[in-house]
Length: 402
Image (cartoon, rainbow, N blue to C red; front, side, top):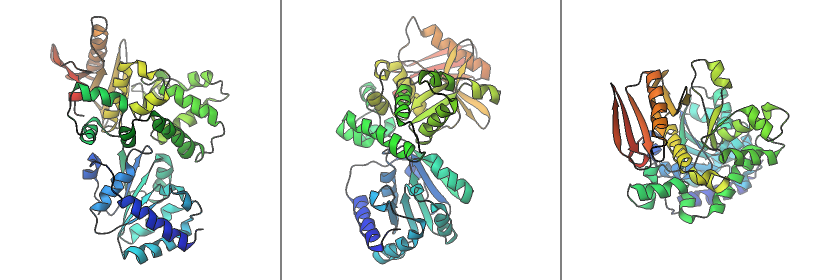
């Protein structure tokens, strides 16, 4: 429980911080969010990717709003019953208002009951958080059918261009490829910021909230995965690497990393769900800059950095992404509404040594899924190959707008 006087001080301080001038750009997601929706709007994404800034942008378009972030250590004693005092302070300071903005509200046990009550009162609620599972668990139980979900990632290449006030081209793309899209890092360029960010995610979003006992192994496993972006793995192989007694520990840790939006796994495509579940998966990171700052070998492989970036471009738009492996491998397969609609191969540069391999992998996937077109993305090559009635488009990633 928190005293009303302390709560008032925190609310006023947070409001001032939210309204302070800072450097930001309009995010693409802003156009898809309707603050007047009768459903709770839930914005999730990795820590420090710009969720609070997006809330600020939304707030600027509203006639009035209440705002509170539960990341504030001064709100550690906050309990669900304190929402009553919170409403009193809000109304005393800002008058009556129908728009409620909350950040990291899942830190308060029982929060979902309060939100459901506000929706019943026809109030408009916007929530943001950095752990998808902790939010979805309560939303699924108490707010089924009464919330809309939005995901936010670090800057896309197009957003990076706006933020840096530069133009599209190989030069700017090469910088984005290694810097990534975390806004504060793009200002400071200090690698220790991204290293501390990783520690914050591991400790605050995973270790504390999931009561992880072996934090040392969690950190080591994370660095191992970040160093092996684009490579396949199995739970049992990782168990052996870290000499763990049970494979369930590996499954849990990777699940926690995915829920915090730090890493993503994609399965090998198989029509059999059983086979798909046991086949090796491939791992990708939420941001190239973050991976580079915290990995052991990722920086030496431009091809894997490019592949990770293409994955992120696809992941922003599609939920069902796989890799395909038959006699050859295709990096990405996209499925929509049960039908495979896209095959994508990634190669930094086509050479005499790799051209046949890269094209064969893509052609195999096109034939298997009966796709008339395939896409081969490179650093800076632009071409088109006609094979019978099928077309392979070769395009620089920086020219591709996914």
